[in-house]
Length: 634
Image 1 (cartoon, rainbow, N blue to C red):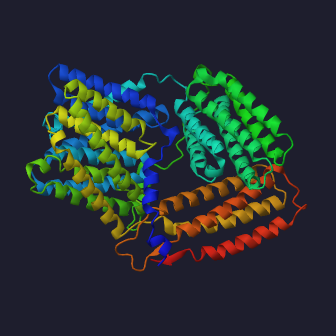
Image 2: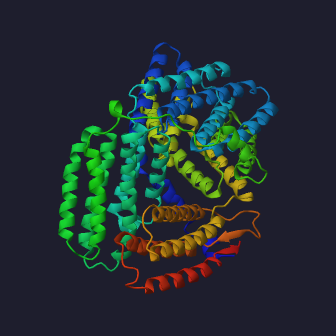
Image 3: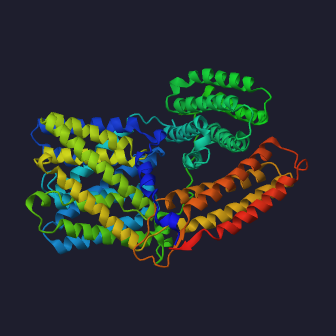
């Protein structure tokens, strides 16, 4: 047993870090404002005509469709929003069919949850749509939210999603490549954060993940000719700059003038942030010239200090990106497009490929089905009246936080607990202070704003928002929310504990895969060094470096997930990983990656100091022996 892991005094600290961390670049204010305003208009109109219960399911359809409005090409974006409404409407109607039969309710809950869990293999938006379906089933089988006819409410939910989709179409000029520009902006914004705090953030995976996400977006955009070249050149400048940052890190500790280096990196961050801002707001691109001038002054002041060749490379990449931004953009009427090639297997093929008894998503589907059914069964017990009105909150909690891996589930449980508590408190205080229907609608819109804006930026804030929305919609339909809000807290705690129990009985861990990723990283470091030693250059070396960086990103993400994985109930002889020692090994390998990147970028003479290759081999060999001791029986 590894005491540093099992005692885990830092587990609460890791969970708190997950709860509070905000990915600023992922905040979606325009989409959130659009959703909040649309919901407010619908609820005000329904209240004006004396039909508030009709406005509730429509506004829920608007909310869930906007949650699925992800940065994608227009066709895929519209499909996601409409499918969210269709499936949420079907789940709502099914909830009404089993309302009078407890057994039918549980059977349908088991089937729906199993399908939703298995379908999450199709990607984040499929997982989100599945959670939305289970949430609507829980709500409409446990509370009267709307016309009290689930079939009609299901149709109204679909109407709401259609309204949201049509509203989103406004401002979709053809060939503006808004989704791609947004993805690029997120990547540049992540790089900006890295530059402003390189000492802390240089080893994070945010930039790498954002670049990969933006690359996939360009692949699916249909861009061709000068338009594709423009998008990919901005990506290439950023990717090269990221590699230079790795190389700079190898010199930071011994640099004679770290203040001058930090000034250069701060100026680079300013340019990257200006590029990100300009990609979203094209009218602001003229501000790039000032940031570029600041970078040039910082580079001139750096002079010929050690590492000057790296600063020259970083400056050149940022200059190229700025010039690409200042030139006329090949979008809109100047865009060149081609039919989008479907490179992924079909939905049916992907579902069949994973349909195996030991597959992660089959296991997740079964676990979600069991947990959601148990939660639904608890909600059907003969509680007293105050609890029975809100018992649906138990399966609703399960629908949102049960994830395939243990680390993801535990972090979601922590964020759900904190977010629900804060959401209940804020909603009750607001309802006490503002008791009119108009005031409740205003609070509902504010909750929707938080929900949509922070969905991918901070789940805790999203939970605060969705809690406010559901409580306020209940208040609009006559539910005594303020007097019984404590029941929501109790139900959230019960649902969270149920998910934790079912997750740790037979946990699916990411941590055990970390040793394989670290060993692969060692092998690829040797391959990278061998390629440099042989003087390899060009595309072949670029591919080796790209593969190495991707492996490093996967290893880092795996260890981050493992850091919040608690002990399992039935894991007497299970394999666990020493996360503390594994992180130390990863940092050593990243330091070698930084040194090799320096050799790569500066084209250093490999024969001038052959000791680096011997030192690397000895160090990696010793690290591989330490990796063998990372996994221990729990």
